[in-house]
Structures are given as structure tokens and as C-alpha cells.
Amino acid sequence: MTCVPARDADLQGCDFTNANLTGADLTYANLTGANLYYANLTGADLTGADLTDVNFYSANLTGANLNGASLYAAYLYAANLTDANLYEAYLYDANLTNANLTNANLAGANLEDANLTGARLPGAKLTGARLLSANLNRADLTGADLYYAYLEDANLYEAKLYGADLTNANLTGASLTLANFTGANLTGASLRGANLYNALLDGAIGYKP
Image (cartoon, rainbow, N blue to C red; front, side, top):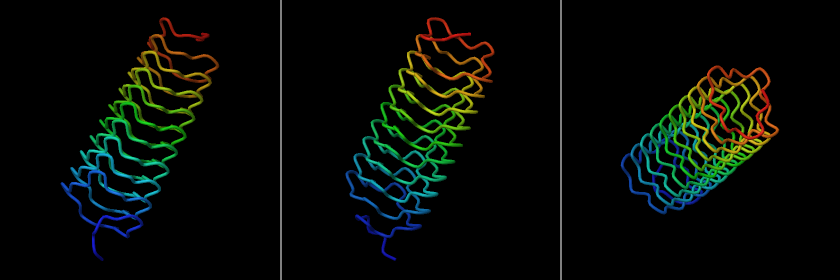
């Protein structure tokens, strides 16, 4: 198999360590199990690509288009996804520890069981995103749009949610210990069975103890 990056290409298991793939067209490419360790994918188009089990450790995905991409169990530790488009992307069980998702579009994305420990998501769009049982321990969600997001049983220990929009979000059974909701909008949010021990809710809109 030839590992030449291209649209619709079969690139299973290919090694692109430190590769410069800036602006590459990898639309619907099959990159299952590929290694993109430290790769530069700035502005790359990965629409609908199969990125199952891909190693994106410290990869630069700034402004990349991952619309509808499958990132099942992908390893995105410390990856830079600033301004990336992850609309309806499948990130079930993905590792996004310390990833930078500032202003990323994750609307409708499936992040169930994903590890977002310490992830940076300021201004991220997570409208309708599925974050069931996701680990958002110490994640920064300042100003994030979590309108109608599904956060059942999620871990938001010490998460920063200053000014976040959680209108109609489902936080049933979530761990919110020491989470900071200062100025957040919780109108219509479900907090049934959530652990709010020492959570900061000063100035939270729509919060009803």
C-alpha cells in the first residue's frame, strides 16, 4: 500500500510522524490506525474521514475540517484543534487530554466516554453534543455553548464554566464538585442527582436550588 495522502485514499496504518499535511485534502480517506504524531494538519480537510484509533499526539489541527469524521478511540492528547470544525464528528472514547479546542465547532458531536481532562474549550460550540460519562475534569469551558448538550453522568470536577450557556442542558447525575458556574446560564438545565458539592453558582442564571 502506498501512503500518499489524497482524497478517498486507503491510508490504514500509514506513518505520517512529523509530516507536513497543511491544507491536505483527505476527504473520506481511511486512516484507521495511522500515526500522525506531531503532524501538521493545519487547514486540512478530513470531512467524513475514518480516523479510528489514529494517533494524533501533539498534532496541529488548527482550522482543520473534521465534519462528520469518525474519531472513535482516537488519541488526541495535547493536540491543537483551535477553530477546528468537528460538527457531528464521532469521538466516542477518544482521548483529548490537554487538547486545545478553543472556538472549535463540536455541535452535535458524539463525545460519549471521551477523556477531556484539562482540555481547553473556551468559546467552543457544543450545541446538542453528547458528552455522556465524559471526563471533563478541570476542563476550561469558559463561554462555551452547551445549549441542549447531554452531560449525564459526566465528570466536571473543578471545570471552568464561567459564562457558559447550559440552557436546557442535561446534567443528570453529573459530578460538579468545585465546578465554577459564575455567570453561566442554567435556564431549563436538568441537575437531577448531580453532585454540586462546593460548586460556585454565584450569578448563575436560572439556577434553582
